[in-house]
Amino acid sequence: MQTLQGMTYFESKQYRNAYSRGYFVGYDDDPKAWRNTFAGVYVLKYPGRISVLDEMTNLVGHIPTWEDLTDENLREFVNVICEKYAANSAHTFFAELKAVLNDFADEKPIASKRFNKILKVKREQSQAVYLTLDELKKIIDYQPQSNYERYVKKIFIIEALTGARNCDSKRLSIANCDDNLRTITYFSQKTHKSVTLPIWNDVLQFLSDPIDTSISLVYFNRLLREICRRCKIDENVSIYTRGKLTTGPKWQFVSSHTGRRSYATNLYILHVEPSTIAQFMGHSSPEITIRRYILGYREVTPDMMTIFNKPIEYGGQY
Image 1 (cartoon, one colour):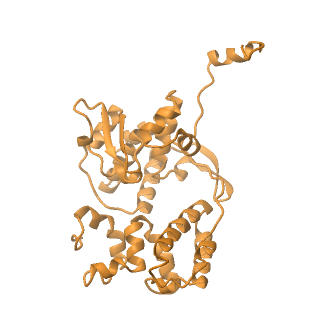
Image 2: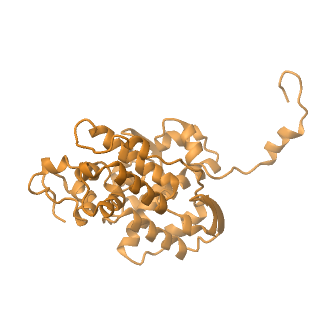
Image 3: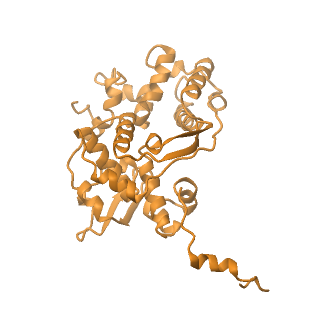
């Protein structure tokens, strides 16, 4: 794809999916006017959510405009999304759409005045999986069967061994490491903070790999699960997701974000404190790390058990 007018090559790659689906119609004629359309605003703000924009397009029969955002259309949109996605995903999609509408409510002809009430869905508790260090080693040793698999393997292992988000992992290379290759530093695109952390030697080969491509997150996750299946990451697990208890081989529940959860959980199991893990992951509070990312449990050691074998004394002493 050629570089879009007024955009860098990287930005053009980022919006390739939206471009291929026709959402850049009118951009070449007047980029400024296009940026003020609903589709333009949404694509620029959430380039990874094109599938959500597709649902709205299918609903109204054309690329949606500000005028298409009526109460009736939004209610139908909520029904469609809630039928196809888990409640937590729907909650995220609606929050993002409300952010766009609230930003432009005073400027654009948005038909719905009740969109904040309509675009609501309750979150539900949902579980996830992480990969152990042994399972990650299987992926490290796996021989990719295509350049797409090679790319997915590279980005996922960088996520799992640095804790970086998928969007940041795509930008990381050996140039982000210090001269001694002991630490890595990068600027988080989401939090806009600089993060520095020590790195495993195993990740260096992936930071040095020049392979680069552009694929959707859906295809990324599909290939990642296939890689995990071939690596026999097939322990039977039961997790609560999409409102019900689901049982199946672990590879079925793996996604890009599993890398970040694996990073946090494996460090925790290795007795790194949550406050330190939070620092390495760029979190503002260890509570976020504990609540969202640490999934495993530390082994109860004999030394720990001695605490419970002693009588409780006055003054809170053991």
